[in-house]
Length: 544
Image 1 (tube, rainbow, N blue to C red):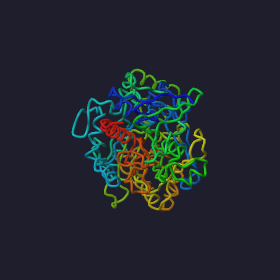
Image 2 (tube, rainbow, N blue to C red; image 1 turned 60 degrees about the vertical axis):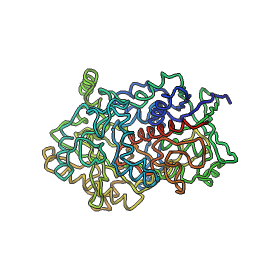
Image 3 (tube, rainbow, N blue to C red; image 1 turned 90 degrees about the vertical axis):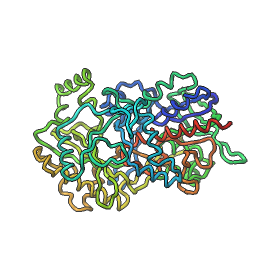
């Protein structure tokens, strides 16, 4: 095995969190940082064209190509489970939506971790630090940071009508989802720069890559962490990985920072002997540290994709139905950086409550001027829109576990969607609310007709069944290395994101969320990395 050298910090994974960490830590020229990424550089054209996610998801060049286990809540279906395998990670293939969630999300994190520094008022400056908001600096937004937030560069009459209809049933229009209360409807703001995707590799890693104290290794697969047991406990000394057909090891003088995401981080921990001992034994891995919470607590947003046929209004189904339409769309993007090629996967958002018992919105809509059977299929041949709605705070919990001790074999991903009565009730209420919106006067002129799931689903139980038939992931896995108090038997990291029982090791990514945020998860992950970087920089004053 060849030595790849010794560094102050080793970062595993160059996704959203890893790119932020690399940038912030290398601002101190006295520390040496190694960033290891399994994927390639982000020089694939379709990463940077917003609609290019269609070419990146399901593409081995940019996607890990994970699948879930067959899910009873979805009628036994297995789902594709995209995760970015490229510099920038999932920020290179995601929907580009900038969404922080609700202030109550972070207050809840503070309560479960016993650390008030995770409260909304404390993390808001971290969101603002990296932000470059199109409206400029304000009480809730930052300006001049690396992470550009812009308005979308197009609108659709059918989406405007849906927004009007939502207002008619009590979901008011708002200007900003990101002030701590996201109730209402608006067009999503996106991480783009003049119609081009902004991923974290461009925003954070590109400037850091010019610094001599950062080493970036791509195409390198981390097989395990190097964990030693000493008289005072377990300590992570570095990582073992393969690259260029050879085995390598790298040593960390200070810390190893696991930023491989909600699927990758628990998988690497388990391969390294950190997890539930009986599970590790069954797969031929020698347990080193007993942490039964590793890989548990998986949470995700299940989107219920309701499709409505319409008349007398333009949708993408028809606009892109022939070569002339496609050429027009291409020219609009080439010359103006606008039009459908500049679109995020979802343009209009809305947040609502499924019932009066919820103090804050527990439903999120992603509304699109298009429809298709499932991701990767062609658009339908009739004009239609899709109103996807998801339960923001599901009670179901899944898990990520080893399939084998082979690090190249994907783990078993079991989300357990709709496995609780509460989630089934919320799903039924969400579909019923969508029908109320679509039946409002503002949409009547377009004569919407329900295509999916179908009007024959009527009772609460029937609607819950329909949810299982049309539900699919919206790609927000979190929680598999849960943050909590060291006395919590399910906690994996403490409030400083240090792995409990292992020195020199932190997890810094969406896996540390004890509860999923009430919205899209990329911006909260970036904030987590900002907080971790600040904690680590503060710790640099201590001797090694």
